[in-house]
Length: 232
Image (cartoon, rainbow, N blue to C red; front, side, top):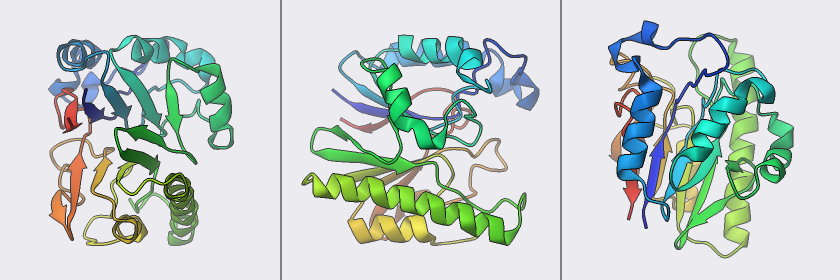
């Protein structure tokens, strides 16, 4: 029994969005995902997939992509990424009902692994693509979703937490953010995130131990699509 994580599958079985234009590592990346997942993950394991699952704009366009994820070994917990247009942020419960027993969707809720609560939200960092005002508005919304996740877990009696984000926990150059502050306030042991693609982006945020918390990047291309062992 083990806990694994990886993000940024960017599947496109039903839409024309080839990923190999972003570098050699993306060539036939879906085959790598399947190969290494089947090699590393066992049926009794838990696999958290940290967002950007599909390029599809709705559930119909994502059907084959989600079926691919569903067929991977282990229990699958999905986090919302910035490209997951199929996932209405206000209707996570609808997805959990529709895919009950097959996939689990993490937002405004929590899941468990042994005596750990698995909490998370999409997160947000500043990338220069929107105004500071819009960035702060979105970040505040995401920190509140994370707070809900943590409070639900705490209310259920959990005292050990692993936090999952899609975006990195800090903007480039920052050493702290509302996400890192919340992680420290609740005593989170690990923060797992993705979204950073290409060698020039792998060091955008925290990695290793900072103030007693372990930060780990699990973007698919960073891992060469080998799921990362988080806990045994």
